[in-house]
Length: 482
Image (tube, rainbow, N blue to C red; front, side, top):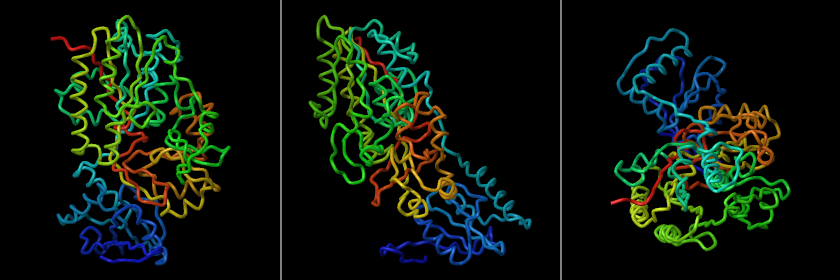
């Protein structure tokens, strides 16, 4: 173990692999294990001093290869990545491979062996399905209560709610299908799950809840991510809080509303209710009290109504403790008990559709400030989300090369034009385009980018393009019959 003290007295530790039976006597002079990807640039500085330069061949999740002009190689591994763990197990087994004087081919043969033996898989990716997603669910509610929508409705939902006078949409933040699958199949949530639909992109609360209330996609609404850059004030604003993301400064409420205000479609319904958690105006202190209010509304006589109800669990706990922690499971069990009461006390002419805005994945953090070659190219601070990150830069080609050098295994990098034409935020990008910088980096692995010069707090996150973030359950609850 070697310790190196760098700038700001930060101590970085790394290990040199000894007695490597795969590369002994071959042109690999250094094999280094680092704790996280955030240590890579410091190790890279040392390698550059020894006349090594980055080699793009053989790059994969958890491994970076450098070489010098003598065709000698240095390999850097990230600890706790799938490839590194498998590779070290392979070394322990003392497996030998025949070297054929072609190092690139030799590495490729070892990779193929590891992929097959250790069954290393990439994350499954999924784009939103605009025929069966949150915007289509919103269309079903509009159809039921007499509004028109440009998007098709979900026939299954249309048929389920058509005969009920009182319809409630209950959104449980973060309850993706992957989270739900970790619960008992006999619980009320799984027993009443009728389908899986997709979220929208980015699969994140700002975009998804706005979609469910506005009935349009993020490109049209302009509500894309947690914090967005507003040119008029030269600030990244947290949309839900009207504050500067980087300084915490509270800002004028009118900045967001003047630029991307919308009216919820249900405001035009004859009767509607909106139920929110305690941190919102007139919000409820507990989930059970919110459920009691849904029951009260359902039992009102001679009334046809729509209720939009939002609760911030389990998302808040998943961020803090991880997708499959005991804390999350316990909270969901509490929620299910309250839903059992709802099922019993709901009136016969009422139904509840339960949905999530997105799922989550357990994540590792990229400290963007460690990657100075990228940070120095940015003319604005990154914006939108850590897994759907917008960059505005001064040298586009150089930024692309540098970003892909470090992160192409973990993010797909789109130019602004490529992103807007991808259709990910819809075909109408009239408002959304103003908040997209020169590039959008979209997560396809388990990393998220922290743009602040401080440690993050997330064990899980969302807004990337993985299936676990995109798939949300459609759950239908009506009065339980004895």
